[in-house]
Image 1: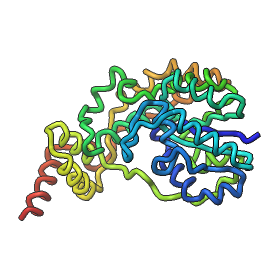
Image 2 (image 1 turned 180 degrees about the horizontal axis):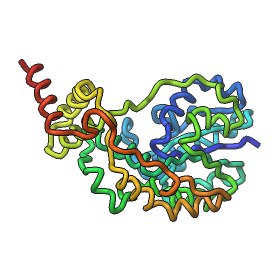
Image 3 (image 1 turned 90 degrees about the vertical axis):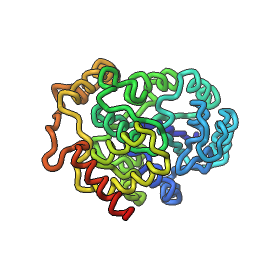
Image 4 (image 1 turned 135 degrees about the horizontal axis):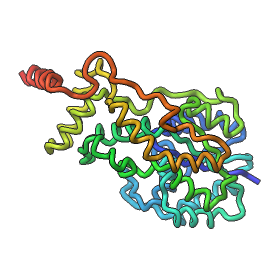
Length: 316
């Protein structure tokens, strides 16, 4: 029987790099006995199936994918292949509603299904998610990172690993889940290992989501807070990447990072205990970096004046 592996995320664990590698090397992994099917596609992955689970619109087509149609396309691909393994991927799967995951399980009843998920230390994942939201032009997200510290879960549901994974294991069984950790190696090599393939079976593309410095991210957040147009935000994104290229990443104080880790510690204790291992994401076992050396890690008035100078010089 063909085994279907569903890579469910989470966000900010190298998913885009993995999906680009799989999409660009479909023939290479097919030679290893793994089909990365051309169904349910949005960009490089099977996001339309995940959109159907979450009731999300396809950003390009504008429609809301239908679960029956997308799941039907997947089962047709499973039936048509003679390869022993099929892999589908979307980080949007991770926080899908339990009742929709159960509906997918019903469609796949009688088929062999594996789940692969990757988690990441909560404070690092928190910062990565906040950076992504803050830097994105036109999304209206302008909240300070510190405003989420009382309830880090409110930033993004993917941060609550235990709740998200519980929904999947309730539907498919705990034995179906393979849990990977972002810190244990490159995402492509880890996924290939989980599939039983050589870690160098596919070429790895360059970074998919360019990181911004703390000053650049804060400039973007402030632009949205004061209501600059989306076009102005796009121009600002390009400019800040150049002006603040030598600045360090956005920084939270060590005490703030400890608060984030502590907020998820009970749930992560239970999650890893269920898998027979200790929680690696505990306050007493993690290192928390001090403020980076060099320019201020986040934006300062001096940085804003530098940015204004660049704009004025360009206008002149």
